Amino acid sequence: MMSTDKQKRYRDRANRNRRELRKEQEKFGTISDGGGKRYLAGIYFVLAGELDKAWEYFSWFESEFPGDVGEPVFLLCWALAAHKSGTEEEARYRFQVAMLSNLYMIPNLVGKPIREIDMWHSSNRDQEDYLFEVEDWLADIPSETLSWLNTEYEMKGARRLRSEYIKTYHALKTAKEFDERQRLLQGWYKYAEAHLGKVG
Image (cartoon, rainbow, N blue to C red; front, side):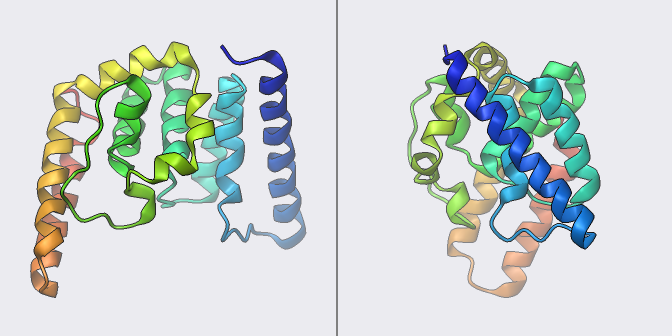
């Protein structure tokens, strides 16, 4: 159980980050963000237990940064905020996006064994070592959400997504020709579009 003082620190950081983004938007008409500061308020609000405020932030984020691919812990926190808000279809979709953004993150959280996956990793964020970079945040994910995370992780739809994703990215590890890589990726994108957010 996180201490009240720590929750307050997270809440203060979230509010400060949100104010800074608003000021920048008001002053320049846009938010220039190469360092990922746009992700912080959503994460901090969830870690503070302020899931209603987090949900408001994620709704604003989606309108302000359409098409943003996000960051694994941020995506996970978005799923938790959607779950708390009662929008279960969106919560499942957000969970599955978060799960695929780093295949090691959810097993780490719910206490499942982790093994290195033999596949092409497209960035440092989808590798196992990323967990060390965000271990403090992961340690503070609300414990009452872990049962829901485990349930979603074990659903048939999530298992199928993981299997197809790993199969595709395993093939990408050895595929050298541009056309072959494009074929594999397009096949995955088509599959994901049809199956993300599904139960079975």
